[in-house]
Length: 265
Image 1 (cartoon, rainbow, N blue to C red):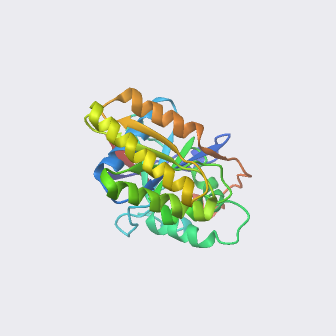
Image 2: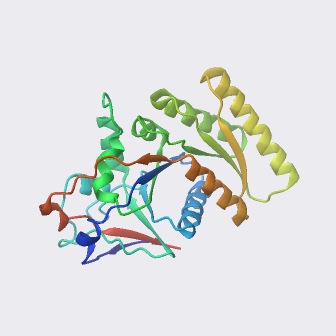
Image 3: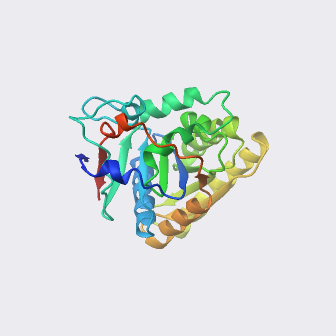
């Protein structure tokens, strides 16, 4: 459940920027709850490594009852002046509904010579990591002019291979970036691992033949904290960095900054 938090000192906190903001991207494919659960496990691993994480969830729609990124971009006043709560703890994860806001940024990206995500730096500069979770059609334009290598979580069977290929194609059309594709192993048996590796090889061959470049692949046992942490570290290594000029927000906006949403685990 998402809980609306309020932090009276948020205005002061927002004036203390991190040296840089690293950008991770995970393609949502609408295929399983397993991929979403893997995302939360990855974020939890990154938090345990000491990184303050904020997730812009492009699968969650903003609304008046559940304000999110679009409201922030519109400089809306949220819930009687609630401000950005930066008080997430190690046991919680900041998750902001962002479907409409990311689509808005995606549409604006055409023709720009800078990453559209840089416009978010003033709002999220107190975090160490921003994770964008969104459909590949939205991610592609957002990742232009970045070095971020997106993660695609492959579903099972031929349908999983086809859906993942479509995501790779949509991202490649906009960015030319390689992707990392992870196949999830739920039982981690030898037979399951062989099948997953065969599917990854099929996907890799299709990507090399039709998209003109290799992809990175891995298998992850979902019940193994060590393998989930390995995936988190690989994503961290593949993260782009946004460290452009962090202009201060207009004073009038500080009181109306959006509230911080916390997903408890």
